[in-house]
Picture (cartoon, one colour):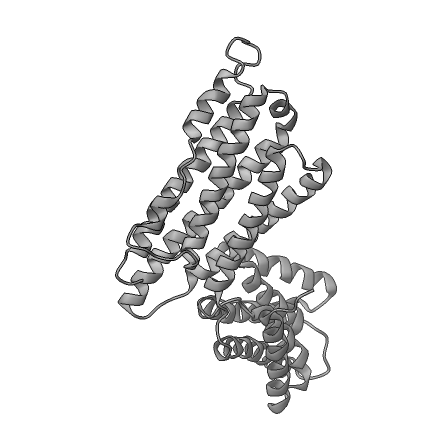
Length: 347
């Protein structure tokens, strides 16, 4: 198990919140500060800045509701439960995020706790402690260098795509163990979802110069297309898995053609990734022109003609033909974007 930077930031924010709360003499609220700090850590500086105002608002809403309930009807357990339901409803009306709503819940529970201190003093300590936890998490987020989401994003795309292409090669030759492939498909689906999450975090990062903003916008477009293309290759793998028996029973020459054309398509995909990495030497002639083009449209025509005389099975291979064509078109678009990106004067 790998412990990431966010785990260390969470621990550090908790330590800071505990020390600050203790330094102010808020012994009655140190744990409220720690819980608030843990729930306020964000994966990026942009999200931290974006949410701190909402978190402070949630703390105020929860504190006011808790004080009103305690002063008016008391702090019996069912009253605390009613307060939690009410504050969640308020946060939903205000369209606050789940982690922000959690701050309001913390405030309700912390302030409605039983105490022998004067209630308003106790409420003030708990409210201030939660505020300390929020600010501690914000400061830690700012103090740490933001994670390099660009590097992580491409590494995830490259690794996941390589796994997909490897399994496609095995599956087109009908060598894959079906239960093992099913598990791998589930894993690859989860990996692609994580890639989308990392892309979203990368897209949230902000630049403060027009030149860097332009470069980053172009890179976002290219990464988005890399992800689209990987998703299409995953659909090809999924289709090959589902249709393995049907494909194995088609004429041998068509089966051989599938292997050849798919291999060329995968080779194209791999070369495009290597081009982005700069691992293919640049020459006077565009290296992308050297990529041996697969003839997927011709293969699609062949697949649609396999069962042409059999009305019942005439469209049996249509899903495979469709996914191969989609994959081919995404690769052509990726090639166009990559050529434009590498010919840009900014690169």
